[in-house]
Each structure stands twice: as structure tokens, then as C-alpha cells.
Length: 256
Image (tube, rainbow, N blue to C red; front, side):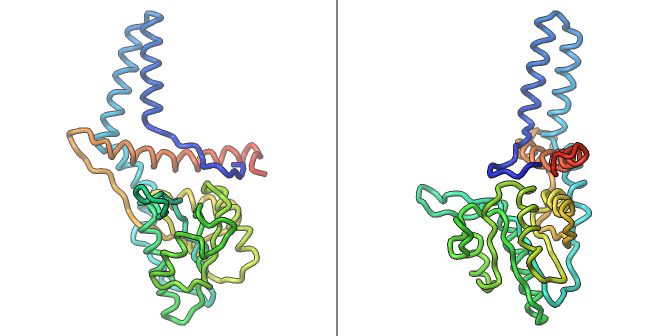
């Protein structure tokens, strides 16, 4: 996937619902009522399975279970933690910016790993990817850097990568940065749902980090449809499509 300064496209469940509605409408217009009923019935059943939890639960488990409760048990002499941020939001009506709600578990896990490495006397650096507030790379301007410094990370151990705005571009630029660093252990920290795709992207550039999930997300099962499960399905499907797209692009030679 070609590096870009814009965020990657997002796949929404509502898009599929819209396509189903158009398909049913078209079939009715062209007088295929039986097919319209079949398509509409299938779309309705799938939507119920999504909103009641079975489909997003399966998708989320497939993404996360391989990383759940997998904690690094050994550090090297020189360690690097790559932390995926999740951009920032403006707080209230003011101009102050804070990490998005999905980023806090990543911040906490990164600080936890950093402290664990420092406690045994090892060196540790943190590369922050996905901070759109850092301007030209100034650590002082980074919302994420300020957060992890406040939790005990030394500012001189932090490097901010603000130039990319999607996971593939983060992996590409991280590879360029890390090629100039000396380290013997590399850790990748991000949310459980995002971790598999992030790790695949890093491996695409020859990096083999220890993938560490900062959280675990599951879908509640309910007889009553829950809109939260739509969001979870959107996020999970986005991860799967990202990996499939990388595979296709590599086969076609578009990533070269």
C-alpha cells in the first residue's frame, strides 16, 4: 500500500447495509421479487448476527487470541518499544488535544514495559508512531510523549514519528528509523484488535517485533441488537481487509 499522508480507508458495516438496500431495490424494480426477498432476508440475518454479537465476537477472537496474556519475559541489553498511537482529539470546546480513547491502554502498556526494562538495568527507547500533534518531530510538542513522560519515561528515550497517517506508512517509516538504531529486542505495542495487522506490516519490512497487546476487546452476546457490536465489527473487518490488501498488493508488485 503506497505511503500516504491521509488515513487509510475504513470499511463500515453500514456500507454493506446500503449495498443490500440498493440490491433489493434494483431487484424489485426489475421484477425479481423472489431474489429480492432472498437478498433482503440474508442481509437482515447477517445484520442481526452482527448486532447480537456472534459475528464480531468470532472476528475479534481470531484477531486477538494469539496475543492475549502474552507478556515478554526477557529483555535485551538495548530495547526498543514501538508504540502505535491513535491520533488525538480536541478536548471539549478548547484547543487542548489529548490522545483518543483507544490510545490509553497503549500508553499504559508501553510505560509498563519501559519500567520493567529499566528495573533490570537495561536500556530502553520508545518510538511513538501515530502522533499528529508533533509538528516536525519535536518531542516537546507531542501529546503522547508528554503523557508517557508524566508516567515515568525519560524524555531523552523518546522519539516521535509524526509523518505518517496509516499503519502501513508507520511500519515503513519505523523501519527507516530503526535501521539506524542499535538494539537487540524490539517490542510492538498496540490494541489487541490492531496488533495482528500492525505486526504483519512490520514483518513486511523485515522487522520481527515481539507483539504485545495493550488490551482485549470482546463483543457482548445479546438477544437484543446492540449498536456497539456494529462498531466492533467495523474495526475487526478493517484489520482483516488491511492484511488481505497487503497480500494482494505484494503479489501484484504495487508495494515496490
